[in-house]
Length: 164
Ligand SMILES: Cc1cc2nc3c(=O)[nH]c(=O)nc-3n(C[C@H](O)[C@H](O)[C@H](O)COP(=O)(O)O)c2cc1C
Image (cartoon, protein in one colour):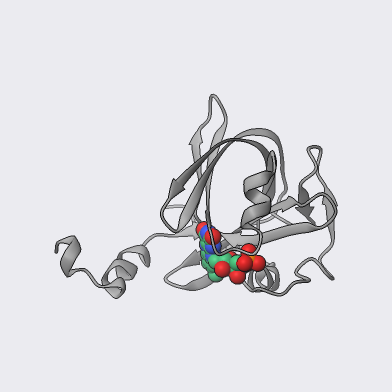
């Protein structure tokens, strides 16, 4: 099939076969924490330690992410489905009742996650509806908790993964 013949449903059916983790990408506007669910996250390189995060320009936090020097990527744990749903929404008080702490470089780190990193933004590449934020990892933390997984529009318990 060529581009002009493709429907959104056909493209989705491709993406439904790709399994990702679920992250909450956070930053701070100086006084308030900001964040949204993102699965367009990838490691770019290990040495130097670079990552990519893609954020839609319609995000209520887009201008804050664009203006700040640092962001955090919080990898949700398998028992954090409620947090995934909350941060995939538009509530103005997403951080209410969600315990979090400020990371070494000022970004909000959520309690109970499987892993987190903080990264310093180095490039902001415009890509139509989204911006690709490229950043250098400057701090990491990880815990003995299985990750939440996302595939085919559904969330899964990563604790039930088995090795092949
Ligand atoms: C599984 C999942 C993955 C998502 N991935 C992204 C993403 O990679 N980038 C993005 O900008 N939005 C992504 N979203 C959508 C945002 O989380 C959602 O639009 C959110 O309401 C944005 O909130 P905000 O406007 O307060 O920032 C994803 C949503 C879900 C459920």
